View (spheres, rainbow, N blue to C red):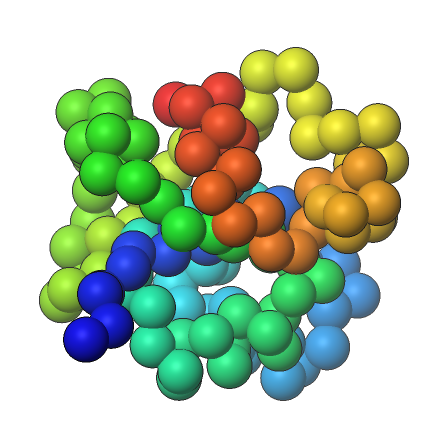
Amino acid sequence: MKTERNVAIIRLRGRTGINKDIALTLELMKLERINNCLVARETPELMGMVRKAKDYITWGIIDDSTLKAIAEKRKAVELGERKLFKLNPPRGGLGPRGIKASFGKSGALGERKEKINDLLKRMI
């Protein structure tokens, strides 16, 4: 039986020059501003939306201790089974190549897997 995992999705880029389809996808996920974080169950529908908006967000599997730390420090907006958090910019920055490159190329965008927890702890 597959365990249910929570995914943290953080918007890192702004609205300027964004495609209308991607803007709608981010709006449906309620990621309307920079440094908003959505925590939700990993579903095929959600992951399809994530892949569509991959050039504007970063995501990964959040562990329970990080989720609890964020919930204690930040107010959450409940969206059914999902939670939306407003975070600070990360201490230490987003990497040498910033928001223009993928995580695998020393940037900030894309899938981080479990390393999302490190970024979230710097943003609390």
